[in-house]
Length: 258
Image 1 (cartoon, one colour):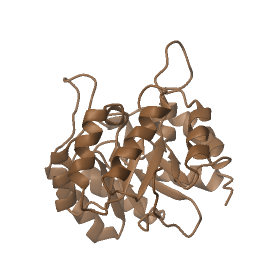
Image 2 (cartoon, one colour; image 1 turned 180 degrees about the horizontal axis):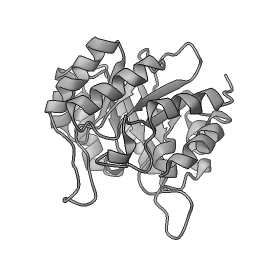
Image 3 (tube, helix red, strand yellow; image 1 turned 60 degrees about the vertical axis):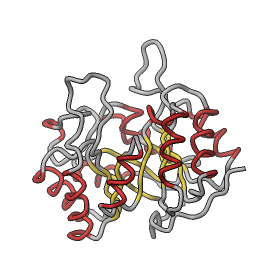
Image 4 (cartoon, helix red, strand yellow; image 1 turned 45 degrees about the vertical axis):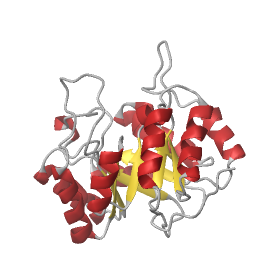
C-alpha cells in the first residue's frame, strides 16, 4: 500500500494547481523573462528542464547545472516554487542543494526500475515532494511500481503526472492520453493527486485548451503546462509551448470543476 501525504507546496486557493514554464531553461534572459511573465499572470509554480533526456544526441540536451542557479534566483525574485526533472542521483543531489522545491521524474525514467530505485535510494532521509510522470508505454504497473519505490524509501509526498503514452499508428496526439489508465490509477490510489500534461499529450498549441478542459472535467488536481516567452525560437518542444499571455487566455476560458 502506498502511503500518501499532502504536498503543502502544492496548494492553490483556486482549487487547481497550475505548474508552468519552459520545456528547457535555455538562457538567462529566456528563463527570467518567462518566469516574470508567468508570475505576473498569477502562476505560483515554475517548471523548467535543466537536464533533458533527448532521443537524439545532436539535439539540445539542457543547459545543465548552471541553470539551477537561475531557478534559485527566480524563487527569490518572484516567490514562486520551482521544480525540475531529475533522472539520476547526481541530479537529485544538485537540485536539492540548489533549493529546488519539487522534483519530477520523466517518462523514460519511470519506465526503468533500476533508475527509479537509484533515485528513491538517493532521496532517503528527505521529505522532498516528487511528481512522477507515466511511463512511455501504457503500463500502469510500471507507474505504480515507481510510486511504490519512492514510498518504500520514505517519500510520502508524491503526485502523478499524466503525459500520455507512445502508441503505434497515426493519431492526432503526440502521446495518446488513454484516459482510462489514469482513471484506473485514481481508483487504485484515490488519495494520489494526478496532474495532466496537455503539452506532451497534444504536441501542439491548438490542442492544449481542449485537453486541459477534458482534464478539468475529470479526476485531475491540476495542469503541468509548457510555457515559453518566445515558443517559436524554443530549443525543444517549440510546437507545443505557449506564451504566458496565451496561457492566461486558456486558463480564463477553462470551466474548472472545484
